[in-house]
Picture (cartoon, rainbow, N blue to C red):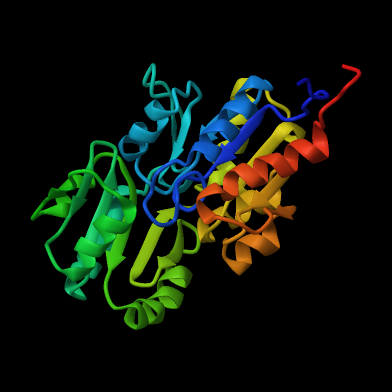
Length: 281
């Protein structure tokens, strides 16, 4: 079966809820086939996730991918096979110190995404839930988080009661408007990220590095951190179970069906639109 020329050369694929099943965080057979089909058509598949780089690698190796990885919501772009860093954004040390100090004073659990590992301030229900949701592998308990800030801090997260964090968000977004993106990723987590971070910024930078034109980029996603990339990539598809914001941002929405196979339906939608089966090819 031959297809017409496929115009896309770089596809950013979100992990949790997109490539991975929303229920059990595994790759369905249909989604695996969809990834292979994109690659066979000459489209590099780039995993793009809020997870840390190291926490993406099991999925990366399961699919036998070769492209760089976008991690920590676009803060880092790194090639797992060579350790080459294509793009990296850091929180200024003084700002990171202030965020950690104030967060601890206000009795939040603090997570620090660092170039070396993920560190957290103490055990409680919020830090445990954050670790589970982000699938963070072996975060390190660290009693003096401010001591980490002289080197590479990717982002800082406050974990606590959602209603309390929403109250904090507006004040802190105004305070750090020239330095940070401040957003509530899910109920109970307030994230502080470098201003120039984001999956789309990372994808754009990587496309330039790889010589891929902007009009040849694809994006697939389902959540709050996919909204910008779904809005700005040349073509994009939100999963059938995606958030309302993600659906509104995307150029198309995957047909309804099993959430574990939504990515496969999204890829088929793109193929039917841009690279149909060609009997005369």
